[in-house]
Image (cartoon, rainbow over all chains, first blue to last red; front, side, top):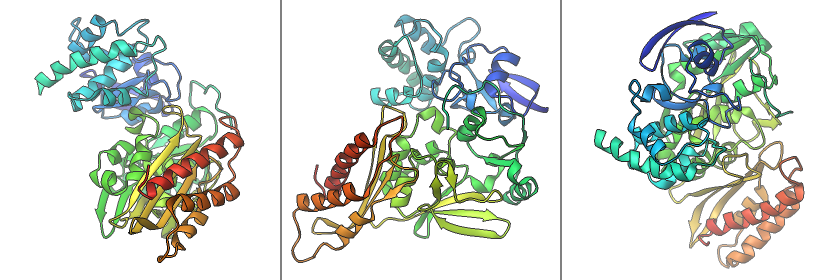
Length: 157
Length: 298
C-alpha cells in the first residue's frame, strides 16, 4: 500500500492505494467519481478519459500511484454545483447524447481541446475525437454542439 | 499471443519511481528478470492486463528529469525516453525536418493515448505494427542504451528481433533516440493502410534526398506491419544509387524496376488482420505511390 495525495475536481484527497490499482478504479470505486466509465479496459474506447494535470488521458492505462501529486478533472469538475458548463449545455441542446454512457469522456476531451485551441477546425475536432467511441453514433450532433461551445472558450481567452 | 478481453485487475507488483538513471540501473541489477521498466505505461499496463508479463517490480522512468527532453543540435535530434508522442507532434523541428516521422506519429493511435505513450516505448514494444520504427530506420536513427557496463549506441535497424522481442538486456535501459539531421533537400512521407486508429496492415516510410535534376540519389523505403520485424528495401536504394547520371530512365521505368525488386524480395506475412496476398497487393500500390512522390510526381 502506498499513500498518495491528489486533487480530484479541486478537492484534495488522500488515499492508500495498492501499487497495482488503476486510476480508473481509484476514481470510480474508492472516490465515487462515476462519470468515469469502465468499458474496454484496454485503452481503445476512451470512455475512462480524465484530465490528468490538464491533459486528456485514458485512466485505465494509468496506475493510481502515478497520479500522486496530480490534479484530476472529470466531467463532474466542469460543472459548477448543479449548473452545467456551456459545453455540457450545448451537448444537451444539440442532442449530442443518446444513452449518455460516453458523454462524460467526450465532454472532458472536447474541453481539453477547446481550452488549448478554441478555434479548432472541424477536422481537428474529428481527429481529437477519433480515440473515443460512441456506440449510439451521436457524432453528427456533437459537431454543432462543439462549434457552439467554442464561442464561450474564445470569450474566456 | 492473445488479444482477448483483458483481466480487470493487474497482477501484484511493487511500483518504484527512481529519481535518476543510476538509481534505475541499480534497481534493474538487483531485481533482474523480476523487474520491468515502464515509461508511458500504455504498452506495459496492457501487457500486465493480458498476463503477457508478470514482473514483481515496475520501475517507472517518469520521475527521472534527465530522460525528458527533445533537443536539436550537433547535426542530430535527440529525444529522451519519457518524451511523449504528443510532445513530438508539437515540435516544429520534428514537423519540418522529419516529416515521415511526424506523419507516422500523427497516425499512431489517438490523441489521448499519445498524451501518455512515448517514442522509446513504441520502439521497445517490438510489435510488427508499431509505427515509429520504419521512419526512424529510414532516417538512420540510433538508440542510446545504458547498462552496468556503461553506454552503448545501436541503430534502430536491427533492434527489433521478432514479435515483442528487442535487443535489450534485462539490466539495460534505452535512454534516448538520436536521429541525424537529413540533408536539406530531403523529402519524407509515411503511408499507413488501416481503419482509423487501428494497427496498420501495411506501413511504409519513404525518405529521399540527394536530388539532381529532379532525381533522388538516396531513397530509403522501410516497411512495417508486414513481418515480425521492419523490412528495409535495400534493393530499391541500390536502384536509385546506380542510376546513370548521363542518361536517366523515365520515372515510370525506375518505379517498375523498383516494384520488380519489391515483389520478388518483400514477402508479407499472413495473420488474422490480413492475408499475405492482400498485403502483397497493398505493398505494391503503396510502394508505387511512395516512389512517385519521391520523384516529385503524384
